[in-house]
Length: 636
Image 1: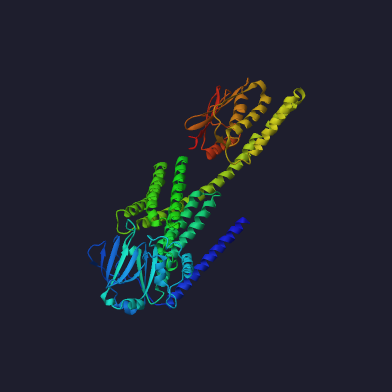
Image 2: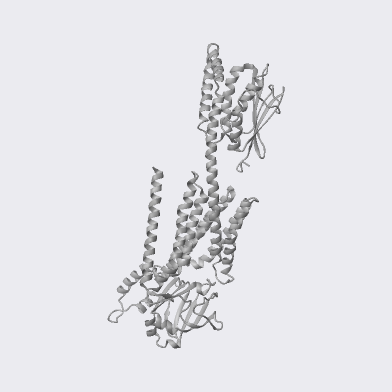
């Protein structure tokens, strides 16, 4: 039922996404067919420009300006074909102030900080030309601040802005356009934030051009990364449950894919946020938080690759530190204390250091192997891109897209690697199921071999004799025999290794019953020096049974069976020895008996504990069987 519900939910989600894609495609085609074309030059005037007070140089409207700057000034005129062809000029800016002057120095347009009173004086007026009353201004202020909660609380934050200029209005403001315009752009932060064309876009159209541009040029790319988000949400989390348990590595990678898709969408779409969000600083907040969520998900994924407890603890602490830093930056922005450009530079440095620490921990954990080397090679493009972009904030390289490209290469490689790893895990899961089936069949055989009719007959006969001569001992023997049988039945349900103490308790019940049968001819000795390990249930008993029946039991005057355990730096060892008749280990035995039980025991120990069984014997001296169980990494 749960499977059907999950399948139905998945089908509904897929259908919903498909319908939404069709609707978006139809609307896009309709709008594009019903509207005129548009142009996207890098500047809407032609002339000269100067960077940081330097000499003026020529520029081409259709060529990007990839220079770092603190202040850049353009002087030129609006081309006649622009005035005659287009009706609307829309430009967007990110994190910089701008001012547009006429040739005589008159300020036409700017996004400079203004107090609320200045804003009212500039944009509001009563119908009769009178000033607003204080009560009217307060109502206007409340209404404005409800839409722009941070804009007028952060005077040093330009944020993301979209400016509409209608050519008709521009001519009205500045009749002498042929004399030219002056455009100034200034970054208020200590370091340059990128090349000019990364922070400034232009769209020329006859109306609605910016939206057409988004639908035509931006939406297909956004849709591509939306698919990556969906891929991360559904594919890898589902893959994490394929093996019947939560695989945190796959789950964290799915989360990483989701936030990577959002991050890449925002990189493409962030310039246009000002079209719908009037609060410039809120646009900045959304863009930066998307970036920070992406980096946190990256760190969580890196931590999921760690295996050592110490590395996991350090990785968890570093993840908490980064998350706390991001939360603090968000709080500072929302309280208008410091915007996320100022705090973002420090967070980027922190993230760079933390990422380097994770890479070092990962490289220390992996051993020299092909897969380990491949894993490190896959992370190299991201590390190089991140290093260049961090240095870019202080040195100034041409553009700052290296991390995006480097991480894209890393992510594609990671996706391919994880898909192959998932296939390998799936094959191992199938193999594991086959082994479990074989182990279950082996347990049936072991149980049948250990509860032979003649053993039960001998045990019951011994108990029957005791009922007459020693009733109390017979009662105790009956209890032990029933617990022994229950232990054999319980072994059918046990699929995982058990503590050695539990196996030893079962052996003691078996040997108690055999002691009743053989009496003084059977001596039992224990030398238990190690117990803190696990092994398959009923894996030592076949060795003890052979020592009793085919070692001491075949000797006329009996003998001793000894069970000992001890540990070394690398292994746990269980030694079952007897001083019985022994046998020639080089002789191929053809005694008519089945040795399936012993072979199954060896196989179970190998499959479940990677243990080996070594048997040595000499005729007339006895036999020694040693089980060698390697210690796990946690036990070393």
